[in-house]
Image (cartoon, rainbow, N blue to C red; front, side):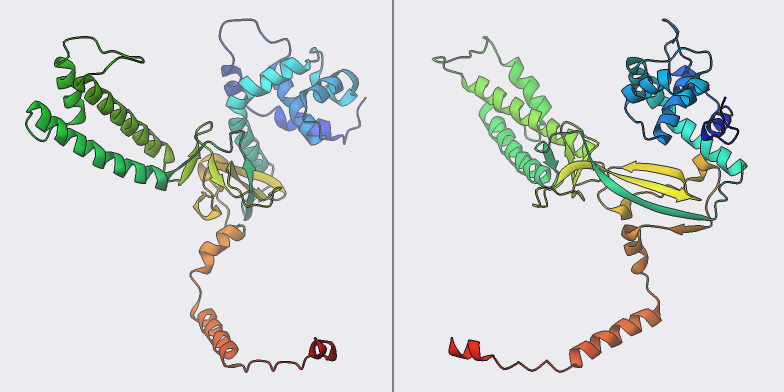
Length: 340
């Protein structure tokens, strides 16, 4: 029914050799079994990507009408778009990385790639996060230093007011203040708070702010910013600046490693600069390391710092020649300029 050189045959033959143990383990042990097997669902999604069909509704429609998709499914029922969405979002997301690097190893066994020359490049994608929920490390550092200064002054005042010994911590001060409370605190308009209640509330507010700043510092992980709605995203400049105002947006830096026209490595990083992202040429996952590595322009900046002496001499000579060159003479203004 299908020609012998049809691409779907080659795809099915290659995917049949993968180990789907990780994909099966992504399913719950209890519950109903899927009508369509996980390998068949994976095949139709991969073939849909090859054909430019990325929406689940398009793939589900093709499974009922296209003979190539029917041949991939065999005697199994065609999945609907809801089943494909659930499979892609829940089960496949947990096992897709393992399946990807299994396929890369198979490409090496088939001599499609030889780990001779790896080309790497990437781009930045905007995250699905609020653009105005930014947290900056420098701002957090300033607020934290100011808070520590105020907290130290408050502890000094509390020590003198209640006759405590010096060198007390904030947590110990809260315990001692709570032990001094003899009546419930009041709240609301028209109620007068005691000095003890005001001291305790101020100390609690400062302690909560300090814990918040500590959480922020743990979330930065060496970065300068993050988004509150997506802590893994970093604010960076995007290539597609529709407003043309150089606005920083939460996003990710995605790097791809290509060899022999095949993508053999993927890295999704929170770093703004390409120089700080790690190489996608990972031997632990691809079972081999390429002999030559051609990075993108962002990585070239890291290489250009270590210039040879000949290149440095040529640069200095060019700079001296430009400096010694005479300035061009000013041209005479035209008659129109003289009149006005």
